[in-house]
Image 1 (cartoon, helix red, strand yellow):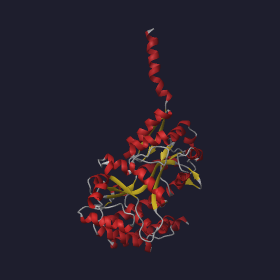
Image 2 (tube, one colour; image 1 turned 90 degrees about the vertical axis):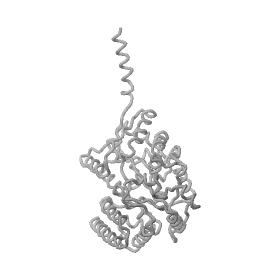
Image 3 (cartoon, helix red, strand yellow; image 1 turned 180 degrees about the vertical axis):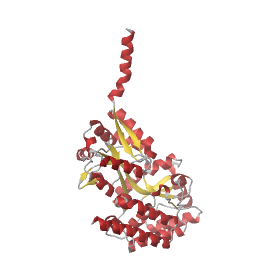
Image 4 (cartoon, helix red, strand yellow; image 1 turned 30 degrees about the horizontal axis):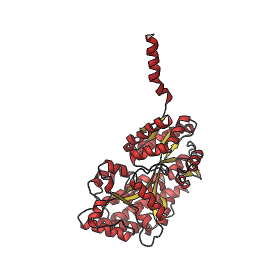
Length: 407
């Protein structure tokens, strides 16, 4: 009789483990490991499938891991990637599953706007769902603006006037660093879009040269701003903490940084946001969008647990868990806005009708990303026009060589 009781107890204890599936999500976003696992645990409770996050140390190691899986016809069932040219290359391997049916569900019940799928399409077919749908915006310290009597700028001239007032008060207007090696493109892309959106697009397909007059005008503007002392120390390796410490009043970054800066101690109620204004002569409001996708392999699409995990990610429960844990928005408008910043950006875009432009990192061919960013970083560390001329020449040589071989 005692043996029977013990056996029954063991069965009861073991039952949940067999009732729940586990699906691994591979990624290179180690700074979000805890937050990703919060979504995985939420899906275990709401959908009966636990997402287990599997981080890689950096983007290059991660790319090598995924590319090795592609080469051996055995990529992970579910993993994160990037949109743009590198996404097109991944889909071109034939080992990534189309997600037309999943998107039909996502838009059919009005969780997602139909246009949200566009960032994840190749030849009109969606191959990913959003891990993030981040707009690149200017976070700012409301306390500094209030102290100096400043308003959110709506024109470029107003932005420069705000920067001058901040500098005159003894503070640094803009935070900008070369931390982790990839950030050098941030101000380049923003200045390029604000001064010449057509040229901005042309850089991604080789039709505009990196030593052309529109690009030179951007470097001149960038250099002048640096000469006026508008930028923080580019050598810092503590960018988020620098913003919290007041080493820059305005922080140009993706919305995904909201959770990072508040977790680092920035008071949420003192955090403001505006979309960068255009320079004179550029009429249409615009915003840069970073759409980080989650994809499934063809093998993953045939696995019931993997598809259940993917559907949980884009569900209201999944979006709310991710938003609460990380502050990230994935485009699910039926879920709660993850924070006041995202809600404000949503409202500003709805009111302004901003055109969406793909982030430079995703738009440029993957083979050019690293070397060009290294050149941009070189300019950040020595923002003179002499350096700019050298940077433009080197970048255009790389650009010309790539497009000549791509013909």
